[in-house]
Image (cartoon, rainbow, N blue to C red; front, top):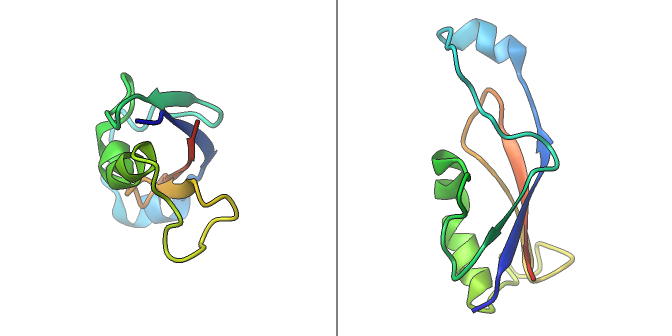
Length: 99
């Protein structure tokens, strides 16, 4: 199986939506742009956010098995994917790459 590098490349923060719809919370996402994890054998890397992992797990598993070319040529590099976590208030975009 191949290793998959996971890089947090962008983190948005929609304060207008938070003000309109979100109840105040004390602790939010710890992920910062530039953070990197490596998935071995398609497994969740230590320290990876559980909710972010849920959105990318199938893509990581497919890449770790040598697959790719998602959605018939979506990515310039067919052995990669750009996936965002499911937090609508502060989504993080992750680049997944086979290494």
